[in-house]
Length: 406
Image (spheres, rainbow, N blue to C red):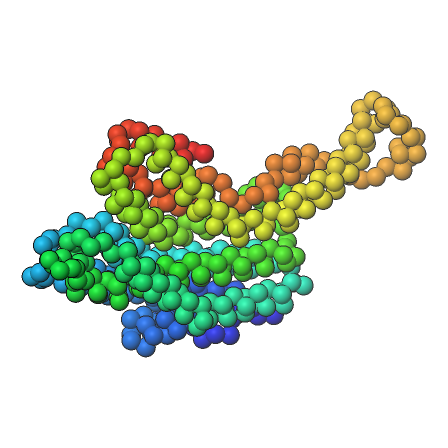
């Protein structure tokens, strides 16, 4: 039975090797589909066979960062025409974050597609669960393509602008001109409110939504009958490949962290910060990031736990039969509960010592420090860079190392 999505956006041409085979029965392209994707396709900003992330990054960064830069530099009223260049928030949100969000799309699509493909290549899904897997995929595609979801993402971007408009400080900056009788938002400020911030917020929430769709798909798959093996050499029943999926989001997480770190940088520009406060901020953010990725992976703990328990019982039974037979051969009888009929009617049993030991070491969690080290670095690095503005470099590096070694 085919599990391939029915959406045309989920079946790109084979013209590029970076995308999975469209004939593969499990195909989920995280950044295909939806009104925003269709708009970009009609504008020839991307193709079904290629997201053209590099070209689109230049377009979006030009709109979000370069245009307000030009407007701020050309302003004849602003007392600080170069303030935009010196604003870490503008750099972080409109240049670094937007670039990271768009460039991450190709990386995320490829990473998630390879992980989903492994469920069929192994194969890990039992034949009886194929209809349920098809239903789970269809549901994920509907959520991915939802116009309502993308409308909410756009509303979030607009909300950011509303909040920013109300929070604009009546000081002479690149976004505000100050006069004797009051202040007025500059052209660069209006552009940022109407274009830059909504675009930043939209891309941010769109990426988070599509990760949630992927997370819910994984949790549905975890509830299926899976062909797991307790003695698999990966130590996780054959599912260890999933533990590395968060690293597909390295650029996306870096973009979010940069925007958040810029906010802290602005806050501490004229204040002090302690190493304990910085450590708490970095540690708390790292927990949030890893928890968001652990949410879908945690669903596999139950089937792995059941697999481990059942396998140990079966292997223990086989080991008892084998070892009692070996004991009778060695000493002529069984030391405990000797029964002559056992020797007369021997039961063939295999030595399962290695299988038993491998099963005992089976881990029921699919996330560990080494597997998520790249995404952890991406989450913490911007905060560390902000920290060195006010704290000794050695102390900041020490905090970074401790958090990465937790």
